[in-house]
Amino acid sequence: MNGKIILTIRWRFILAFVLSSATAAGLLTVCYQLVNSMVYSNSGPPNAPYRRILQWIINHIGSVPLLMMVGIASFLLFFFVYTRKIVVYLEEITQGIQQMTGVGMTYRIEVRTGDELGVLAQNINEMAKRLQRSLEEERKAEQAKNDLISGVSHDLRTPLTSILGFLEYIEHDRCREEAELRYYVSIAYQKARVLQKLIDDLFEYTRVSGGGLTLALQQLDLKAFMRQLAEESVPALEQAGMTYHIEEDTGELWIMASPHELVRAYENLITNAIRYGKEGKKVEIGLSREDDAAVVRIRNFGERIAESDLPHIFERFYRAERSRSQHTGGAGLGLAIAKGIIERHNGVIYAQSDMSRTDFITRFPLSEKGRADPMLRKS
Image (tube, rainbow, N blue to C red; front, side, top):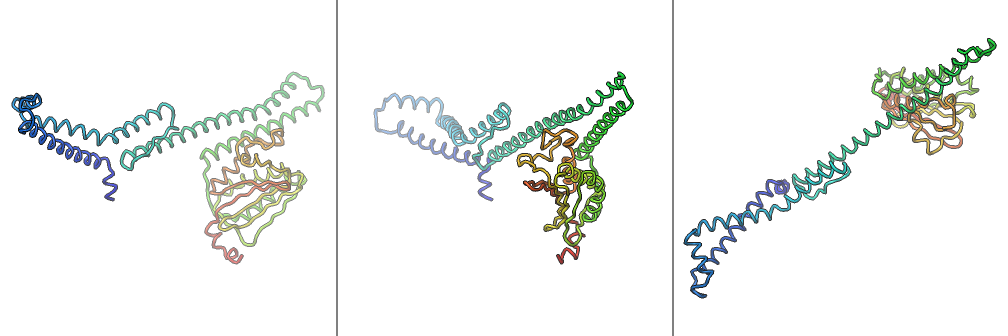
């Protein structure tokens, strides 16, 4: 504590003041003794020029005013010398701030002392670091906004162009038969449905990522929830020529969740498994407990996701296979929506993929009821 007090600027200036006073007093004493020996000593020539000059100064100005002037001048000189490092470091901090405003927030001031100036330099560096981070986040947000507008524009333009083309064809009475007319109307209707789904997904993503999602949490039996959701997915699975299989541990998995929102997340994951796992003919749903977490694995046996694509598949408008059409690859929002919903439930989601299968894994903290389940304790 005492060491910290001594290292403060206040005590440094007090120490400089004391040292300057002591040094100036010592210098005055030496000068006084020297002048006396030079003026009043019997040694040396009595009419030496320096004796006459000193005697004239003493007789006309006085020894006391002379000592005061010399003392003040020497005190200021020594005080400047003893405080020079502090002043130089303060100037360095000032120049550092000017550098930051000039060349950007990447510049850092060297922290060389443990006093208030060192703390000031450290705080300025921390402020610059935070401002730099804020600027980077702002640039990323601006880039994300531009990417969002670009992605929306591109994905809306494709079905809309098709719809306008078929409607223009019909508008100009180019259809010769009613069957041809119905065919083009059917295609336009399908494209309109795609457009509607994209707009719905966009609104859902904006609601989830923009903080507009309000969760009505309640105790949820995750196993019963997933079994029911799997049964509701049977028509889509049969249409794709697929089946499902559930693997689960003994005991129940209770979490705090909003069932309505969680349905949307897992519907997107199951839809993704159906879309990309048709070749494997089945979807596996694994339910287990790992430590104090409820784990759900949705597995398909389709084509492998490239290692370079895995970190990005939950980003909006990202498609692992750029060559896929919108009908095959979707709008690129389903996984982003699922990620947003699951993270709002304090869960995590990630993917693993190899040559034989792809797993989408979600983990949720167990509720108090889930941790206290006696069947779980036995297992």
